[in-house]
Image (cartoon, rainbow, N blue to C red):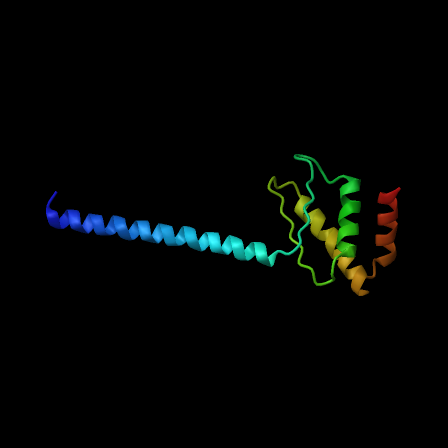
Length: 117
C-alpha cells in the first residue's frame, strides 16, 4: 500500500473512532438526561403470552387515579399481544373520568368494582 493511501486510510480510521466515541458519549448523556427527566416511574408487568389479569388492571386503575392528571403514561408490549391497547384504553377511561369528560363514569365504576371483588 502506498504511503498516500495508508495516510488516507489512517485518517479515515481516526475520524471514525472519534465519531463513534462522540456518539457513545452523546448516548450516555441522553440516558443521564432521560433519567433526570423521569422523576418517578412505575412498572407493571403482564405475564408473557397471556392476557392482562384482573389484579393488574386494578393496580393500573389505582396508580393512574392517584397520579397527577398531567402525568405522561407510556405503554409497551414487546410480544404484540394487545396488552398495550388494553392498558391505553384503561388509562384513557380513567383519565376521562378524572376530568369529568366521560359518559362512561358509571360503567367504569361498575367495571372497577367488578375487578375489585
